[in-house]
Length: 232
Length: 208
Image (cartoon, rainbow over all chains, first blue to last red; front, side, top):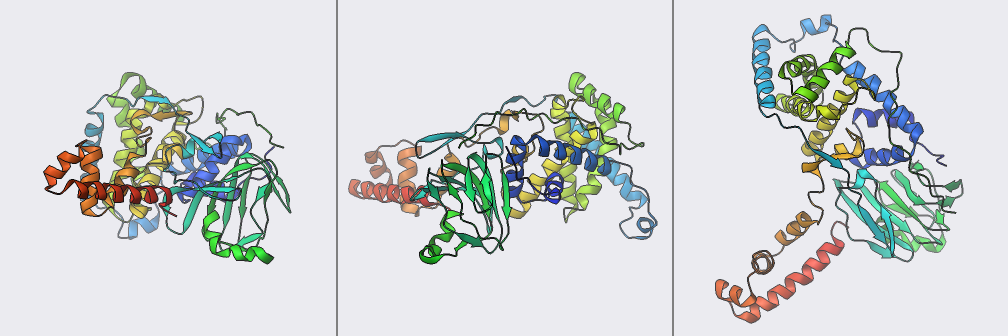
């Protein structure tokens, strides 16, 4: 049962296409498993589409501003549009579509089917520390890092916090922290103020996005801080 | 406990919003789209173009700094409408919603290209235009990760690159390479060994 969902504002930005690819992918993965959010996304899309394509009322500002196109600009635009139409319709072919292939990934001898949103993204080789395995997804978004994180049964990430944000979408399995249990499909977005210590009894695979290295907060685990950037 | 969730259909229910705008003739737009899909009708497409293009242009102009890019959005979006019209399903939503999706996807990919210099066109995987379907020519171009491999090879020192490309891509023998490059066979062998060791490290640890 999915209990954690993206906030309304996040869904709105997703529909508008304004999020970085990594976050848009996280929402897409969640929505694939969550009929409730699918429904909200469909509604929001319909609304924003309706709004985008209604006739723009002519405002007084437009008439005064420099951006108001002159008569000759209009003619130039008409010509441009005419040539676009003939270019586009010159070829009668329609795109052939096929069933999306399912891409699989293996972590520690367990095979997982990846969500469609991840089907074409380059995946780095897995790096392992103890019960954790992590593969970077090559999205090239500077300080934002996206990965697949696999936790073997009984493993966990020591208590840590982030300077930035940390998104976890559970692709398979479950984990728990002090706030409770998280299951397949849950969308968990934490900001830098929250400290947690996720543990996975039966193992799990997560899609993670973070914009800064994690910072371990407890006792001996502080020694792990140099590898904080390893995990997320 | 691992709860196996049944895979739910990703069907988007057609939400009838109360805010349906009076000044958009949705039935007409759907009809034109269907004519484009079924009959490749250029007249219907021209109607669609005249309705959507100026609006797409105006929206794109607010997202991109230069005019050429906003024209690119118009051209790409309308060209996708022409080539993918058969993926539109009037039972699942309004024509405006479908065209908006196409436009948003084109815009997203172009913005990503401008900002991150990535031409990976991820949008159709993130916001599918038709459920469970991908356009054939976009499918898994780099399934075997050959682009990644080539990029790593290109990062090798020139001398090692020559040997790797000759041996693996042009399938020359080590002897042929020695002759071709006018080098002792031992040099070819050691360059190849060095290059492979580097590739191994690169492919394993790249981007960490």
